Image (cartoon, rainbow, N blue to C red; front, top):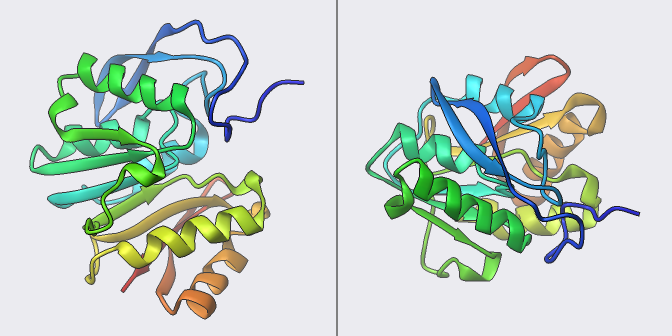
Amino acid sequence: MSDHYFTADPASDAERRVLGVRLGGQDLDVEVAGGVFSPGGVDKGTRILLDEVPGPPSGDLLDLGCGWGPVALTMALANPAATVWAVDVNARALDLVRRNAERLGVADRVRAVTPDGVPDAVTFAALWSNPPIRVGKSVLHEMLRTWLPRIAPGGAPGGAWMVVQKNLGSDSLARWIETELGLVTRRATSSKGFRVLHTTR
């Protein structure tokens, strides 16, 4: 049985390979590997997020559940005045983000760390995420309780932008964020069975 990508040290084949992808309007080569989310390229939900969200603001930004780094790399490429925190529990994913940031010349502004590697004092001008819905509600809710309160007040382009499949509970998640966390959450757009939710303080 293969590992789920939401694993600290996946046991599946770690052989890296170079893949051509399009990020931030550029055709780029990145490294991917098994045992991380979407090793075949930019998945549909992430692509919708990247296409629909306005360009990131300056300051500290968060990619929650970064995988091999398509969101974090796009943020870093889009705004040289940003410091991007690429957060994941998967050590292989974090290694790939570091390698890809180096490859694309943005290593000076990408911090690939586990959740406890982000200093408590850091707040985020924006959070972008294709959250790991399939880990289950209790784990997902705990993640959001931890990170959503750390977004800075203000509207777009700041706030938290998350893409969630409609049939995996995007609308109920939006209601939970508003009810449980007291944060305004609206549907920014819908595309190809996905919702992009925008949460603000």
